[in-house]
Image (cartoon, rainbow, N blue to C red):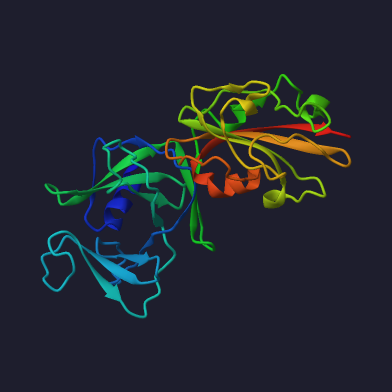
Length: 320
C-alpha cells in the first residue's frame, strides 16, 4: 500500500490502520452491493483532513461522522471508535467504498472480519480484519487476484479477476465436431441421439468443480433465458476434464431438457440451427445443483455468476 493511501485509509477509519500478515487472495468475482461510502469533509474548516473529518454513508442513506478512538460517554461504541448521526447533511463524493464478499480471505476459517474497502481511484481492494486491541486501530491487508469498479448509479461493485490465468486460456473442445462445424446426425433425433464428447483444459487455479450446458437460441426457440435446453451436467468434479461420447447414460447429475425429460436431448430442428455448449469452471463456494434442474446458459450465468471463475463455449450446427 502506498504511503499516501495508507494515510487516507487510516484517517478514513478514524482510528488508524495497522498493517500485518493479512495479505490474502480474493477469488469472489461478480457484483456485490455497496455496504457503505466514505468521504472526507473539513468539518472545522481548517484546510486539513483530521481523523474526525470523515463521513460514512450507510446503504439505507444514513450519514455518520467518524470521531476516532474516544472515551466520550455520549458517543456510540465508547473505547473503540466513535461516530454520531448527522441530520440533513449531504456528504461529498465518496473516495472509498465498503463491501462484504462472504469469502474467508485470509484462511482463518471465519468470514466475520472479511470486509473489504475499495479505493475508487484505482480499483484496489484492501481487507479489514477487526480492531487491534494493542494499537487501538483497525488492521488492513493487501489483497491479490481481484480489482473492483464501482457503479454509482446501481450501487453495485463489480469484482473482476486479475490473475494471470484468465478465462481466455480456459478452453473447451470436442472430438465429435470442431467449433462452427456441423454436428453429426448420430447426436440428433434423426440418429441414435447420444451426447457428443467434450474436453476442457487450462482451468483457473481456483477451480473446484464444473458445469456444462448446451442450448439453442434459434427460432422457434427463444434467446437467453428462453433458449431451448438440450443438455446440462452439474456438480462435475475438479478432477474431471472430459465427458465421453454418450456420457449422458453414465449416471451424471443432469438437468431437465426442452422435451420435458432429464439428460441429453439432441438437435431436432425444422431448419438449420446453431447449438452452443459452454463449460463453466466454478469456485469452492459453488452450491450443488439437484438433478432435474432446468437451466439455460443465460439462467445459469445469472444465478451463479459470483461462483464462475472461467468459461468457454463451442458451437455446432445441425440441419434436418
